[in-house]
Length: 255
Image (tube, rainbow, N blue to C red; front, side, top):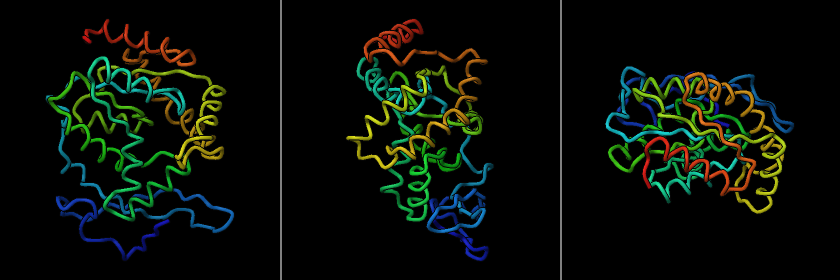
C-alpha cells in the first residue's frame, strides 16, 4: 500500500496535466492484515481536478443513459450484452474500467491502489471512479441509441456526484434482483473457472456485504424517484431478458 508522507505531496496532479493546483489528499481507512499492521488511516493522493475546474454537464447531447444495478453475480453483464446486440445500445462496465486501470493505467501508484481495493471487495473512491466514467461517457456522446452503465452507482455519494457533474441523472435504472444465497452460489461457481482476482470466498463475502450496505440505498433512491425497474434475476437468462425487452419497447426503444 502506498503511504504518502506529509512532505511528499506533488505540485501537480499525477494523472492530468490540466490540473495546476495541488492534489487534495483523501483520507481512506486502511485495513490491518495478519502479516503486517498498518496505521489507522493513510493519505492517498487522489489525482482529481478541484470541483470548480471539472467540466460540468458532460452528458449534454448524449443519448438516454440507463444505470444497470444488481449484486455481484446477478447477471448484469449478460443482460447488457443482449441489450447491446438487439437494441444497439453502447455499454460501459464500470468494474471493467477499474480493472483495466488497475492492470494497464499510466500511474503505478493508482494502479496498485485500485487493485488492492478491488481485491478486498470494497468500493473504489468516487473521485477515481468518476474520472474514468466521465472519460468513457464523453467518448459516446452523440452515438448509439442509449448508453448502459453497468455496476454504477454503487453508493449514494456516487449517484450524487454523477448528477452534479453530468448535469443529469439516468433515464431509468434496471435492477436485477437476486437473493444473497443465489448470488453466493453463482459467484462460487464462476470462481472455479474465472481468472478474476476478486472471485474468491473472502472477497465474495466482502463484495456482498458491501452491496447490501452501500448499494441498496441507491436502489431505494431510484425507487422513490420512480426510475427503478425491478427484474427477478433468479430466473433463466432468456426469461429475464424477455422482461427487459418488453420494458425497453414500452419505453420507446426500437430494435
